[in-house]
Structure formats: C-alpha cells, structure tokens
Length: 365
Image 1 (cartoon, rainbow, N blue to C red):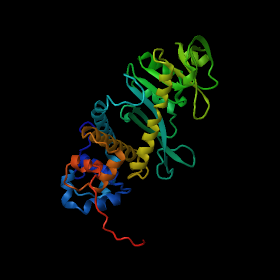
Image 2 (image 1 turned 45 degrees about the horizontal axis):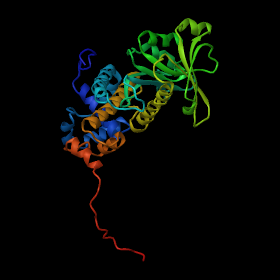
Image 3 (image 1 turned 135 degrees about the vertical axis):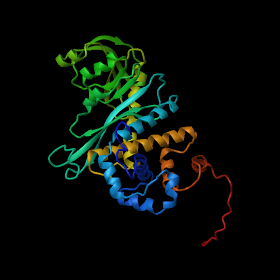
Image 4 (image 1 turned 120 degrees about the horizontal axis):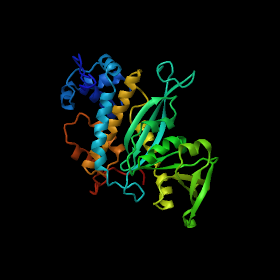
C-alpha cells in the first residue's frame, strides 16, 4: 500500500475497508454499490467484527475504485496464491507427474462500449480478455492478466516467467514457435496442439501401443521458413485418435522422456482451466462491475481472485470435504455470524444418521 500510495490523503474507506466491502459483495452476491451500501449499513454494530472500520458510502467506494491503484489488490492476491500453492503441492491432477503442471488459456469478458470505452474491440462492442495460467495442482491461478480485447492470446507468452522443469499445457491458439523457444531455452516443457498445415520433416519414429489410441510417435524438425527460424531444435510429434469424437489429434512437445500416452493425458488435464473460467464467472461478481474505469474493473477482478484463493486456503487448512461452491453458499448466509469457520463449515458435511419419526399425518390412504 505504501509503494502504491494507497493510503495517501485517505480520511475514510481505507484500502482494507475497500477490500472487505468488495469481498463482502463477492461472498454475498451483491451486484451494485447501492446494494453493498444498503446491506452493510443495516447491521452497523456488526461491521467492526468484519474488520470494516468506517461507514460505507457508495460514492466513497466509487471514488476508491476509480483512483486507488489496482496493483495493491493484485499484490494481495499474489500473496494469497503464494500461501495456497504449497498447501496443494501434493494434490493429484490425473497424471503421475512429479514436476509442476500449468494450463494456459484465455476467456473474454463482455463489456459495453459506451460505458467501458477503454476496452474497444470493434466499432460496436468492447471486451476484456482474462489470461490465466492455472496450476493444475489445486486449480489455483499462478498468473493472471487482464487486457483489452485487441490483445492476441499469443502475446501473453511474453509476460510469463518460465519455471525450469515445469510443463505448460496450451491450445494451438498460442502456437508461436519463436515464443515457445523461450520456454525451451529456460528448461521447461510445453504440450500443445499442432495445426493441420504444419510443415515438419520426420527424423525418427518410435513404437507406440495402438491399443491406447496412439497412432504415431515421431521426432520431427520444422521445415517451414518462419517456424524453423523460430524453433530449430527437434520436436516430438504425437498422433492419437480421440475416442469421443473419433478425430485424429496432433500434439507437439519438447519432452522426449515421458511416455506418449502420458503426454496426451496431460493435455486432457487442461480442462480445469475452462472449469475455472466457468466457476469464477458463475459464482463471483465479474459480470456486473462496481465501476467503469479500467482501474475499477481490475481492482474488482483481483479481489474476486483473492476470494477464490482464500476459500481454497480455508478448505485445505480445515481439511473440509465441502466443495468451494458449497462454502460460498454457506458464507453468503453467515457473514455476520460470530462463529468460527471450522464448526460452521463442518456442519454442512455431517451426515444425518439420526432417524426422525415422520409425524405428518397421511392425507390419502
């Protein structure tokens, strides 16, 4: 906060107050500043126990969203992610892999051009793009970037800091060999889909177990002018047939040690990033925004991510079998209850084994 001057000349609605108000809106599904103000002013005597130290006013919250740097809440979210990821370091994700696995993908966030003029896509509409690098252990975001709709998803590779030995799973929308070569030089591996018009020359062919759906496992060298110029090292090309669609899929990777079937299954593990987008769009408030400026939208996005990660931390530390969706539903009704989270959330998973006699009379015999 001091680095970004978040508390400079602030008389009310501190950074913590703003964070708690927007986190309250996420947990209780409020969709406007007026709704936040009404709901927080009703139980004034209980605001202190939530950590809110000032009176909540929608115009004060609007000003804070507009002028207070969103990087403050980005740092908070990154700090929570740093706490959560070690808790899920041993979490399985469908593939027997000791190294870290990440799924990279993007999703659009529809906006109104007349209101969000800072994010134009075409002459008639606006949109933001949410770029996410998801840690497959625990489905936690390791990297998030919100851009306007004009930024192509392949450009996000320029902002990633590769982790040596890690696997990056991505769709063919980010198939840029010059950028992918930077991952290779850093000692990390990638698994991606290959395009049908990819020009490559086979060097070696390896045996495959066709009973698993594999068709071929080859070592190839790119022969296209620009592709070979960007990536001169050999690649591994794996062909397999999708049992659901009966289509032939082509995968490209820089890993030559793992079995071919394991690499194809690793690509299937990128599906949680789609579930993450669906989950955060359905259960967190990133469709109705509390401000129209770029700063307000990014602040709300990072606070939504903080809530998501905080719920993941609570779930792991309390060893709850309750899903994150169920936890959100419970917290939405118990925000002002003075009760520890442990018994509050644990009660939701206690099986009802007692038999309660039915005292309701039968109306019809």
